Image 1: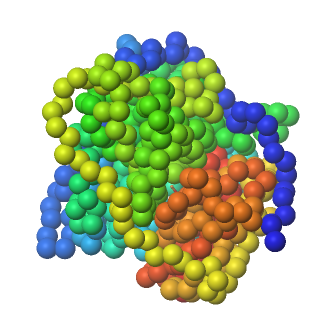
Image 2 (image 1 turned 90 degrees about the vertical axis):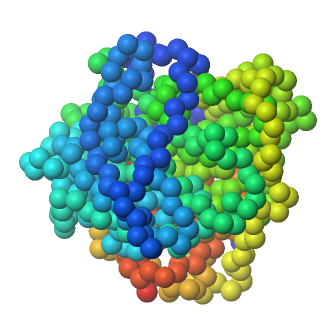
Length: 502
Ligand code: C2O
Ligand code: CU
């Protein structure tokens, strides 16, 4: 039967702490869409490509005439894009020139525990000093267990076997209790995995393949990213609740630029959309829609290609979800400006970016084949176990099955190679993310999966008072992995759990 409903539906907009920028909002559609640079390996051998990345503070020009300090991989926000070939190992040496400890997680990576960015496997700040200094953030109130048990290294080599199919992955900070503030300051980048199957399809590529990291931010008067510190406000009525629900900004950035413009040809483009926001959900639509609608042709999800392309008028993206989409701008007359709008936003947050369609561009030799890939269906009837995880608010925190995150305590011990059903039941909106392996959505509130649930997922958008069942099969790597809410404020406020594969 249907899982029990908890909590209540929250009508209208998204609850959370909506911050207002203390600078004039930057003008829309002035900045050109930046494309993060692709980082080159420092060396390669027969099996492996080696990269080196340093997280550091730098200034970025996001607002007109004003600097913004970002904490970025290689000093940029987004960080440089890593491109891996499926089957070739990627080793990234991460260093940390920030004033605070870091941990790096490859989101969507099929990665052994040691390299998974476990939140207590930290990289110490290069200058030494107090690894915890200078951070506000919200976890102070959250009763998070703090850094006890943490191990610090001056740098870490993260080894990614890349024994996985082509997909849009991303890497971001995962430090215990401080993921929200650190990602908000800029510690996030794309990591694309490519393979032969995908290359043979003839999808739009090169300058017609655009990664889009969509993230909301608010700015302080000095131009810096405004992330709230709860200090002194703990327990004040209303304040705690708003902070707990998540941090929302009033400026929408795509690849770090406010409401940018991309100049495009009358041709197909592949848009690799990532919701890189801490807490904000989006419902994206093209405005105007192309004649006949269905302008957003989804070809892939978190875990790579779908079996067949699926046309949508709108796409809903919860934090951390990826949608791989082809838009054919030849369906519009030359000279059309097409906005990507957010139907869940209001005022400044109801717009995202714009595509200005030129007249030239030459031939379009790209294709979107009717069959993209094949996906093995995990059979729920063969599940070796069914486990239930209840995501729920407590007095001062967010919990899973009634417990706040405690490192080393494992909530489940799935056997490698076996299919299991995991049920997520929520009081509030929670984008539920699982490390190690992707899963398939089996049902929502006892009904069929939703319009945005297709393919291999690693994050599922669980709406308030829903029950979602997924089928998962963990493979290859025994060890401790994480299940958590990807609303980063919820995550920092303890909505995380460990499972141990064996
Ligand atoms: Cu993108 Cu454990 O996170
Ligand atoms: Cu949550």
